[in-house]
Length: 113
Image (cartoon, rainbow, N blue to C red; front, side, top):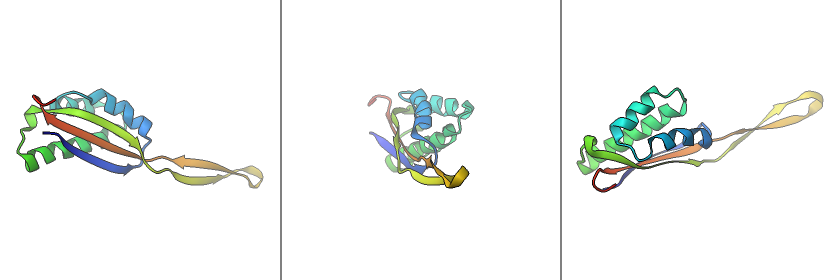
């Protein structure tokens, strides 16, 4: 059975999150959690929260064992961009893009993946 968890509107660029999600894609949940725990990237904390949520969803809603779960897919999609302006010399402004992302992690049994 495939179980998902999603965190939306996370204030970090989806490009930075993808670097982390590519590391854990296809791994067992326990191994992925260990990898995320020791990564220095700020995105690793957000991805770890979503992974923990997906694992809890599988355990509580579908009575699956956390030891037998494997990450089927981990994606980071682009969310809406907040547009801000920074004043510059001689009355000009430069735009600043504050990007957001949506993180989705799907886990499934070892035999299904």
